[in-house]
Image (tube, rainbow, N blue to C red; front, side):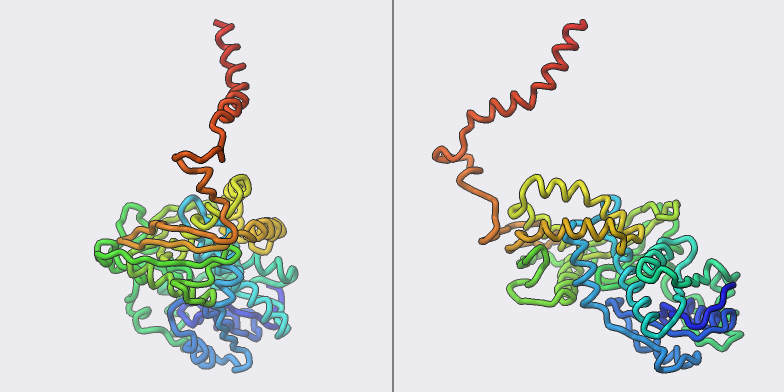
Length: 410
């Protein structure tokens, strides 16, 4: 075990990270700095400060930061400019938050002179990869301490025993085995649910599990119309009201949740090789994806949009696999952002019982839609239909050559 003088711990104040805090002090004999990020998880973060002080952390070594605007502006919005999904469904709500946390942990490590960082991700999950790849990309010689890969506290009972032995405050529900029968992770983009009773992929999640969306059956019987204004691929206003990035997502979550939009139950392929079942609520992100495709459909060149669509699955895997700070992701992001220069205008949506329907889109400055050409009525010569015959014959030439060869062989 190498010597560590000072470590930055990603600290939530829950059972796992509180045990990790004390374990770091006991095993590594090092000074611990706690970092708690507010990325819109919907819970108060200040209690983490109180608990850290109870565990002997100096006040100057406790960092609590509101990262909600940075999260949406610099991570969520860039990802949605690419219309990113993983394996056709997952909107990467957990994946996109980890590089932000890693970045701020490294910033604190540099500021305080820490030589290590620590996290509570297990050795089975994806988050260990995302935290650590992000950290190494920003501070190549940082030491990583991942207690779940080192200790023998591999059950809730052992964690509770350790907490009792070291007088670590434990939430009453945790001690009595109460609370949710699964693991949850929340931020402004989504809530994820996994583990526990959800480990059986054939088990239907109870409706009471979902926190931010009503079931479509209980959604309002009347549809709601929403208008989103875009500038360079990002939403800047909802129903004519200008909003900051975080407030955009908060409002879309409210609207989507109200109408039962954004639930997902899927089995995904984890980076470490196993399959994992997860349930997700992403109401705002689901609306954003639908609307962004709509505004791109009238403002982007066909081949540029096609190229972007070809690259999206690879871009999604980069994020899922923890390569946010990699040179290939940064290069691809510059291409994506350049494509968004003309993605300006307005999209009108109809929200109703779990569905998002695009009912209008316009761009006064950048639309490539020309009704005089696309009309099925008399276009006044704007489009010469006779040209299509030669175009089709040229594209069919290779097919005709191959077919003639087959005929000659018979």
